[in-house]
Length: 240
Image (tube, rainbow, N blue to C red; front, top):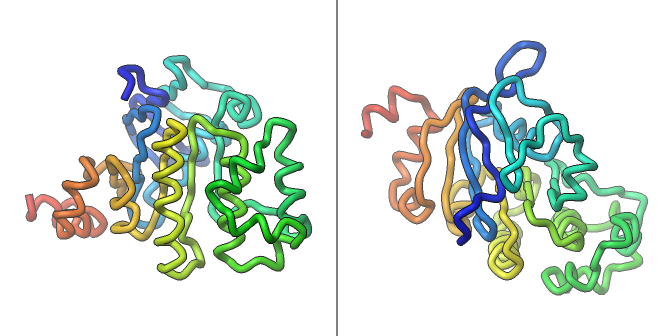
């Protein structure tokens, strides 16, 4: 792991109409590292990903990519610097085929690279995305992002609407891509245990603030601490 983080958030606050969704968030992420960003609904997880992807401006603090501030940089500019965002709900086009998604991604898209990780899609190239199963649609969303060889991959609720067995098959692919390609990944996920199994570290947010963070392997062994962080600070203090 390199000494220079790829991504750094320093005392970041994110707001909507003057109401803070995230407060004073600091974290860093190195190439090849997977960070699980956890917490209950409304904790500020998606807002954090949106800010890192260039869809949301910070109210305070700073976000840096390769040591340089990305303040005011829109999503299309960050995309050219290797930032890829897989949004909640997958963000695919139901009327387009699998192959058309890869062509739409642009000249730099490497469909062969993506199909290496998702070989099942190779037989579905001519099928419209709207006719795919939920698991296949999520594969397509991830494959389209991977085809562009991201340096930073932001995945919002990979498991949304999927059976746990499908999620179990997708999570290791995220881990493998990070390891093999040196891609840094932030994974927002409600299936806490599955996320921790593939992550290096985890940060738990509640009401827009960090209430717990640590090595994923350590947190897996302390399920009660994770659950308390979802319930509230008083329960967390009791366990500590």
